[in-house]
Each structure stands twice: as structure tokens, then as C-alpha cells.
Image 1 (tube, rainbow, N blue to C red):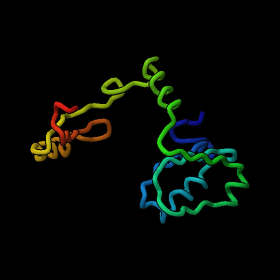
Image 2: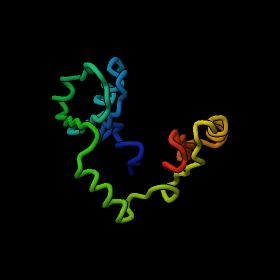
Image 3: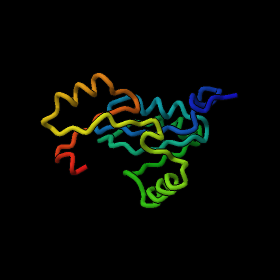
Image 4: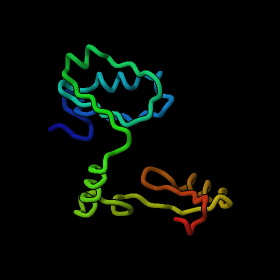
Length: 136
């Protein structure tokens, strides 16, 4: 039985989702992501890579890959996420294993860094509130 979290049994993946930052245009990770896709796989680009990014053109054609780009999200996608939350399918906050360790004003930066350094890890975070905690 293949483990969906690790990808397909054959080592190829169904979807490559890219959220590259603006300075990623010279990186090879996009090419590697494309090459990891199975035939008829899909690339979803939502990052902000500036400039030209090289794609392995022949591999895209040979595998019949689908490429879709989107800046941010559509209003329909926002509605769908809201419906998932309302239906209890998408958990948020502590129900999803996420914990806010504290909200700190800028003047409390030392305490914020101490908390983040000592306690933060995946799913646990500290926030800065530059306009004051009341604005949160």
C-alpha cells in the first residue's frame, strides 16, 4: 500500500505546488519539481519568482503535464475554504495542532525572541503586534 504522504509507490508525485519567492528564478528546484511529476501530473504555480524560470520543455510535453498559475486565490476558492471550515473538515487553531505562544508588542521583542527560541517549532509560534495587542 502506497503512503500518500510520501508520494506514489513508483517515486513520482501527482502534483508539484510551487510557492517560490522573488529571488528563486536562478534555482534548479522548479526543474526538479517538474521532473518528479508522473505522466499527466500537474504543476500549480502560486509563488512570486521574478524574471524567467527555466522549464524542461520536452519533459512537460512527453509526460503530458498540466501547468496552472494563479496569483493568490479566486473568490470561489475563498468560499470553498470557508465551507470546509464550517463543515468541520478543515480544522483551525489548537484543534489542528497549532498553538500561539503569545502576542508581543515591539517593545517586548526580547521576551518574544526568548519564547520563540525556547518553545517555537512546527505548529507553535509567537506573534508581533506592531500596532498593539488591541489591534489583534
